[in-house]
Length: 351
Image (cartoon, rainbow, N blue to C red):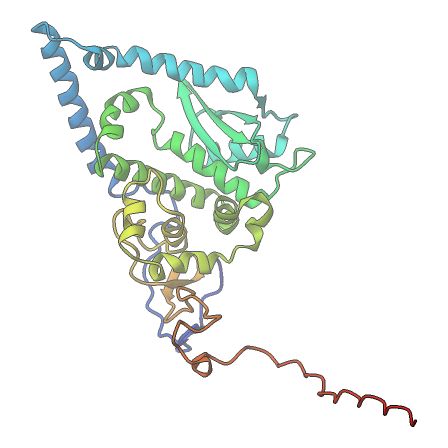
């Protein structure tokens, strides 16, 4: 994610050979920016929600009312009750982060809030993770809060990976700073869960926006954060971030496209590619078309060809295929012991 600016006239070395640097302005490396698709998609969802509300009211006036229309009409009360319950649960079931309890996590929440220009520090809680790696942000009334699963911490309360945790907390506080947890926004986004393609695309755009906040808060935590989300708390540091991001371009196909299209969050490879390439917004519908490498400050250059691992290694010939057509085995062949002639049987005794 970081590096030094290459010397002028000396093309950097990347997989595939020297590549002439083509610098692009790293528009998403500085102050966090909202994903460009978020507001247009939000407008479509709000308009759809408004049509649903108006239709429910009209049906109620003419006396046609069923359980579905009733839910729409009382949705503001249902949402208010659900948000209140969500706000109360970590307060009575979780552990609050304070300057004296989980102080490292609390300081990360405070720093992110200050960095984003929030007037108040959101409440923050640790809840039992039971092996899950997760965190979320929400609100009720004028209160905003962040919940972090316990598996992001070590025994003793220290962060398992401080940079990764700062990125994840920055992502969640970013949802608050971007207004994603507002009561009125959630009322207006009621139709998001019922609109195919558009609803999930809005959700993905919001996640990209929060990722922009997380990157702005702690760029060095991006590789560790993606490793945690992909391989868990024990193996996260073993993840090769560049190899993960490269697969957004090299692992393509109809079904990978469908998985992203129907997901509420960008698929992990696309998300990693967007966090590596700060020159453009994350891809909502189509896989990134080019692999890049960072050169510092969020700028990138094309990487050229990268190794791929999409073909399966052949261990045995296909039916009817000659054995000698297989690729040679890797590594030295162990020496075979010399053949030994069995001893001749003893001659029969003389009579």
